[in-house]
Amino acid sequence: SHMTSTSGNLTSYFNMSNNRGITIGNGQSIPVLGYGQTNMYFPHPPLALKNVFHAHKLIKNLVSVKKFTTDNSMVVEFDLFGFFV
Image (cartoon, rainbow, N blue to C red; front, side):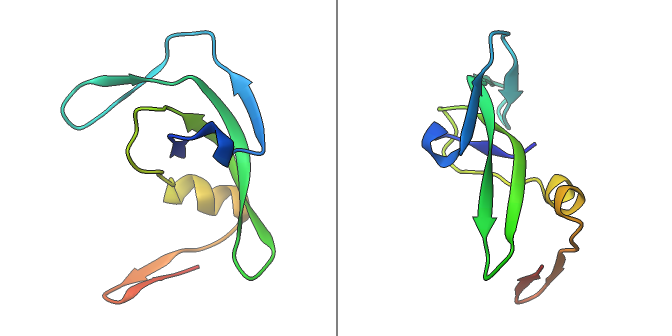
């Protein structure tokens, strides 16, 4: 899933009442407080990031490449110099 530490990054927001969490590299669980949607604006058109988890203890925003390409019917290619969408 996509993940963010800041709910203000989301254009819509829904609180989560269950105790769902994200397990990080050291085995700890970070609680998910809610989820929402936002858009990324490359030159155009806007690209959707759907069902983005909000976990305030994350230190970086994360994008799931598989979910991003599926939701937007896009292809992402990586090479030595970066990536191409």
